[in-house]
Each structure stands twice: as C-alpha cells, then as structure tokens.
Length: 91
Image (cartoon, rainbow, N blue to C red; front, side):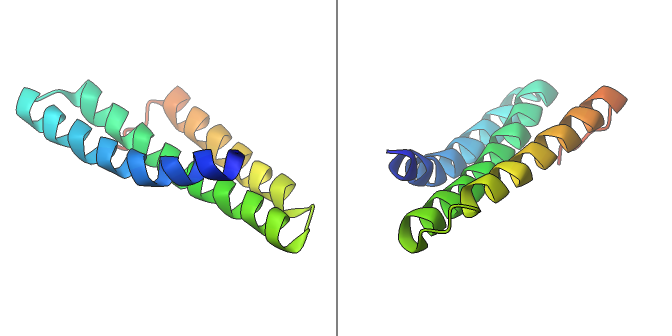
C-alpha cells in the first residue's frame, strides 16, 4: 500500500507543482508560488520514501526504510530551520 501511494505521489505531485506555479504567475501570488516549492519538496520526499520501501520489499534490506526516514527527517529539519530564519526558496 505504501509503495502504491508513494508511486502515485510521484505521478500526481509534479502535475500539481506545474498547476500551482501557473496559478501563482497568473495571480502574482508569492504565497501560491511558495506552496508550489513545498509541493515540489513533497515530490522529492515521496521519491526517497518509494526507494526505501522498494529496496526493503525487493531485497529484504530492513535498514533501507529507516535510512529513507533519516533522509526525510534531515530535509524536514533543514526546511524548518530555513523557514525559521526567513530564507526564501521561491524561484
């Protein structure tokens, strides 16, 4: 179930990013553009999750899923610190 959900996210999320960026430009909205960046980040995180789950399922490497979780945790902390500092990642 987790593999299917992560794979679906990898298909749907990039389409959502494109739609949000198009909407942000049309509206001139920095908030919607920032949301598109966060959606893109979610896409990358879904890819990490999918790799971790797939490696665990295919090869039985139980350590792959926790490694993926550590990568996701690192990215989440980094994004939180950047947000706290007020750093802008919007294109």
